[in-house]
Image 1: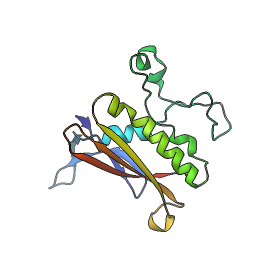
Image 2: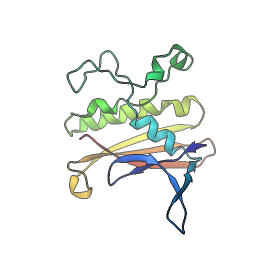
Image 3: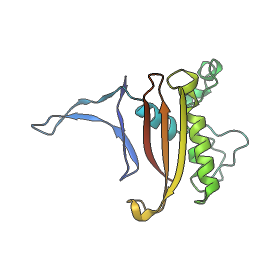
Image 4: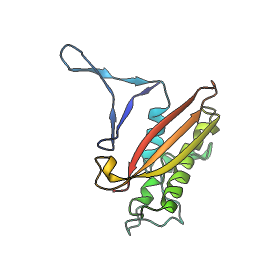
Length: 164
């Protein structure tokens, strides 16, 4: 069980979910989540360290990444790194190639779901959504993540990701 992380397609931001008192509208507690939504959001929208051969979008030498991945036990046993390399596309043109790379980066970030047995299969589909259909200033990339759970019940998560 995780603290529920919610995603707002209007603002393209994540936040923790709150249980709200229906009488006073005051927050009572953090919402918990037993689905994979929070794990998927954190896997996709946490910056994974860039590979040595990745071209960085901001002309710096900042390869980013989660600090915990630099500790030897973090990746030694599993080879997993936290997060995704989607951030590398922050200055990319809105092309089919960029959408393909985003799909590849998302699949890479979610491979731990199948490796750990939390899912039998994970598929990612990407498509450009015009700005006129969102509150974003420019087109956004839709990420449709489908997770086939061992229970046999697939779950689909539709997410928007802005390059700007």
